[in-house]
Image (tube, chains in turn yellow, orange):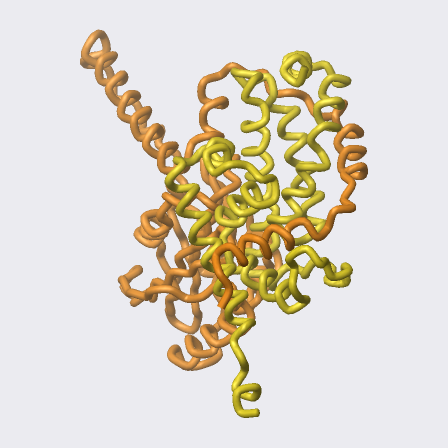
Length: 182
Length: 245
C-alpha cells in the first residue's frame, strides 16, 4: 500500500503524497522533537524533511526503501536545524518540565533533569541512535539501516550514549557533600 | 548507582513522556507549499550525485575532472593545434580583498563565494555564518561547510586580548570546549590554531592572528560528517591569506 503511494507520489501525485505525509508526520515530529529537544526546531525539521522528501522522491530508486530513505532525510533536517541554533549559540530551550510525574519508571524530576542535561551533551548521531532504538523500539540492525551506518557503529554509538546517560543519572544519585556531612 | 537495566528503563520512560504531539500544523504547512515546490527530476549525473557526497569526495572528483580537462586539452593540442598561438590563460582570479577587514585571500576555486555580513564582529558573540561583521566564504550550494573570516581593532596587548577572547568564549559557549592548540605562520605572523568540538554535531578549527593593530580570525566550520577534517581547508585559506599594509 505504502509502496503504491510512493510510486504515485514519485510521478507527481500530490494526493498520494499527502496520504504518505499524513502517515509519517506525527512520528517524524516525535522523533525530531526528541532529538532536538525543542518543539519549534522539531517542527521546522519535520516540515523541511517532508518538503525535501517530496522534492527528491523521483530520485528514490527503490520505492520499497522509502521508510529508511525518508528517515535519513529527517535526520539530516534535524542536524541542519540543530546546527543553525547551536553553532556558537546558547543552549536550546528546555522542553517544558511540568508534565505530571509518571509512575512507570521515571523515578523523579531530578532524573528527568539529569537525563535532559546528559542527553544534550550527546552528539546528534548518538541522540538519533538512542531515539530510534529506545523510542521507536527498532532493533539496532534496523537503526543501522535507517542511518546508513554499519551495525557495529550503531552498537557502539548506543553503548556510548547510554553510558553517558547512566553517568548523568548516577551523578544525580551521588550524595552531596552536605548530605554526607549530616 | 543505577544498573544498565535501570538506565534503559528510565531512558525509555523519559522518551515517552510527551505523548500528546500532533503534526497537524507541520502537515498543513507542507501541503500548503507543495504546489510551489517542484520535484527534482533532473537526471544530470553531477547534480544528482554531488549532494550525497561528502566534501572531500567532491574535491577529489573536482581534481579528477581538472586532470581530465588538462589531458583533453593536451590531446587536442597534439592532434591539430600544434604551432597555433597559445591561448591566453582562462584561469579565473579568485582573489578576494576585504577592505573593511584589511586582508586578501585566494578562494579555492571559482565555485566559492564570499558573503559579507554587515556590522562589526565582537569576540564571543555568536560566531556563525549569520553573525555580524563576518566574511562568510562558502562553496555555492554547499550547506555543510563555511569559512568565516574577520578582524577587529586590537585594543589590548596581544596576550591580554587572547586571554579575554578565550575567557569570553569559554563562558559564553560552554558547549564548545577548546581542544588542542598549535601554531603556524601566516604571511609572516604567528597564528594560533585551535580546535573546537561543539555539542552537538558540529566542530571547527580556528586561526587567531595579529598584524599591526588588528586581531584576525579565520574559522572553518563543518557539519556532522564525522570523517571530514577541517584543518586542510583552513590551511588552504591560510596559505594564501595576506594582511593588508
